[in-house]
Amino acid sequence: MQTKTKRNITLIDFKSHMNSTIKLAIPVSIGQLGHIMLGVVDSFMVGKLGAEPLAAAALANGLFFLVMVLGIGMSHAITALVAIAKGENKNEECGIIVRQGLIVNLIFGLILTLATYFLAKIVIYLNQEPLVAQLTESYLSILSISIVPFMLFQTYRQFVEGLSDTKTPMYIAIFANIVNAFSNWVLIFGNLGFPALGLDGAGFATLMTRTFMGLIMMLIVLKSVKYKDYDPTLNFRSINWKMMKKIIRIGFPSGLSYSFEVGAFSFASIIIGWLGSEYLAAHQIAINLASISYMVVLGISSAATIRVGNAFGERNLINIKLAGYSSIFLGFLFMSFTGITFILLNEFLPSLYINDFKVVEIAASLLIIAALFQLSDGIQAVGLGILKGLTDVKIPMTITLFAYWIIALPIGYILGFYFEMNIIGIWLGLLLGLTVAAFLFVLRFRHKLKFIDKMLGEVNKITSPL
Image (cartoon, rainbow, N blue to C red; front, top):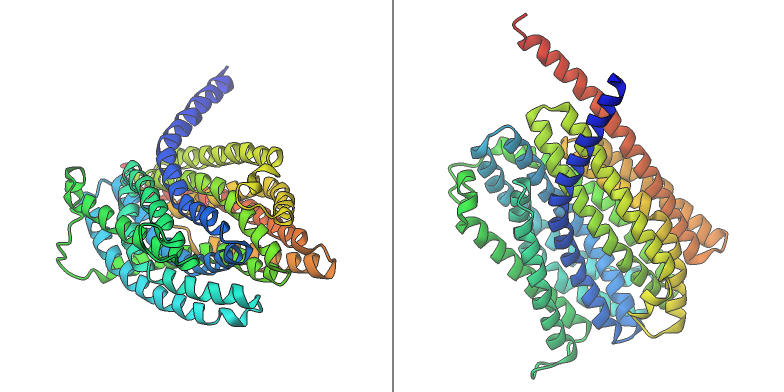
């Protein structure tokens, strides 16, 4: 009877944590979808220009996010630190975190802008088709300017999400899609009297949209009454070097973790480009579709970071465990659904992007593999978010390096070129890397739970009056 009672209580707690995670995750996921839809809309419109501009967009976006994820990871430190501070009821510290985070992120954004601009200049040496390389260089140069306003948006977005306000960034992301779609329509095709800029027009539209997002997000946080208790204003009392170092210590390894993963997919885009523009265009379509589901599960990952961070700040081991495992289960459940969808609609979905029969055929075969790695991708994404909520970033960074650069890419290259499986072999390598990462992240979380349990036990012994 006792065992049954415990199991029922655990099940109730598990459902409660799932519901809490879902409430946080839905707005984040919608917001993440809003971000990825910016790229989807770009791909839809650029696809009307032909295979070469679409291939160039694939290559440029892959290289751009290889750099940009360093900035995203850096900004994610704010969410984890704010969530923990909130769990400890340290409201004033939340304001300190966002102010110092703003300095770190803007400086880092400038560095990333220069790095991206330089990267655009070496595209011609990546053994791509001449027209694709030319279009990529110009488009990527424009995208580089959008990094600083995007980092401004990320700073305040991660702050409010750390406070469990996930709806405000969602609304901004949704409205940003309207701005982006209209700007694309005007600048890509030359409507309303503007010159037709083609792929470059999509780049300028992205720059305008990210500037809009950054300024609106900042204005809302500075003016809204609901954040007043945390003092997120620009009232800098001093440069808090200790807090800045803490943000960098958590944020930079987090950024590297994302960079290793995105870098693997970006490098995969490069070697797929050696097979021809049709293969690269198909890869872009399949990755674009897989990114939609990934953005949803990334919302679950962000919710996991917030909830685990709150529980960690409260020093509540049970809630850390339940928040973590319930989030992993949600990620698994959602990605199971999307995997089935990719299998059932593997030919229809690519046809929405382009009319080229061969590109659609290749993309359809890739979606079958994408369906298989949905589960691994979901678990590894959520697992990384959980560990971030515990400020555990260095070991996960090592895991991502191993999974994607020691496992995924070498095996993908061998299967693709030595075994002549072409793009299918490369994607199978990516599937294996995601699976390894998912397995190791879960093991790491189990290890951290044991460590936290031991740590809290020792603290209780010290503070006990007995």
